Amino acid sequence: MLSIRDPVHGFIRADPLETALIDSRPVQRLRFIHQLGFTFLVFPGAEHTRFGHVVGAMHLAGRVYDALCSKSGSKGEGLLPAGSHSPERRLARAAALLHDLGHAPFSHSAEDLFEGGIDHEEMTRRLLGTAEIEEIFHAHGEGITTADVARLLAGGGSPTERLLSKIVSGELDVDKMDYLLRDSLFCGVRYGTYDLERLLDTILPIADPETGEWGIGVEEGGVHALEALVMARYYMFTQVYFNVTGKAMELHLNEWLAEQGCHWAAAPEAFLGQDDVSVWTALRTSASPHARALIERRHFPVAFETREHLAPADKERFEELLPGLRQRFGAGSILVSNSAKDPHRLGSSRVLVRRFDGSLEPMEQASQFIRHLSRIDRYRVYTPPALRDEVAAALRGLWTETAS
Image (cartoon, rainbow, N blue to C red; front, side, top):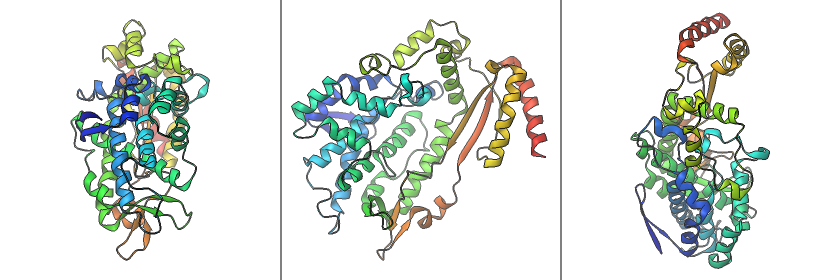
């Protein structure tokens, strides 16, 4: 058993399959992909990588599996077989370890630039099909295959697989559980903390009476732990992930990549050679003002920003101003970010709460706090320093004028 000391979860043990996967090139590449893109230029401690995150997610997948298994009850008998070596548990852990293989350099900063229009989920599937990963499963999988992992990451087939899939990527998944704690720790903030132990103690498998689908819900006693996770996610988006300087850095990267005509490779072997180091090396030798903005931290300042929770009508009104603004000042002088998220919407399915009397109700109904959260939707406009005041005055005037 490989033993890894993790700053979030303590000691993490890996079996022979997991150890071989951790040593593989696709997983080792994640050591050179910053978990939060260019956020390390804002929060100096945010040097953590996708590698640490996937190892932590693997660990939590086992813990969540065990928690659900202990509460499967008579109706869920056999859905999640008990035992640390059960194929279902090992599959969930392997899928959690491999779920981020396809992330492009600097994670989400420029994830829409794959050749052929594929996304990072498709790249993950392609990497799962490489000879190296196939051989590892053949040698250590004991019946688990790369096809099983790919199927799980795509949502699963059988009822058991669909529940396992939600452990990795769903409403109350290990991805969120890990990245909130990890990002909060390394950024040096407290926004992402929540009561993981209480949450694990109160989660349980619940069949949605409307669809019959098994999902991860919580007992009524765990509602406040669930609220804390939602609040952590909300504040991490507003204070860290949508940070004003971090968004500026992402815009400069995308402008530079567009100038260079760069795309992330669609072929697995070529993609394995692309990481933060390769991109940063190219940026250092580029004379582009967008490259210099990143290397020298001389990013465009923000000239205007909307409120954090734009109503749909105001969102449409702001977007109508942009073509004229770009025509007036030049497209390259106006960089616009749209930070939008429903942090209280945890997934496509409902999160159900089992009340003390055995009845079920949706999370939003059980929690008055979550019920009143609204969508984050904010625009920011960045310009070269010389144009900042002029653009700011123009936008303030237009924004006030169109409001009336």
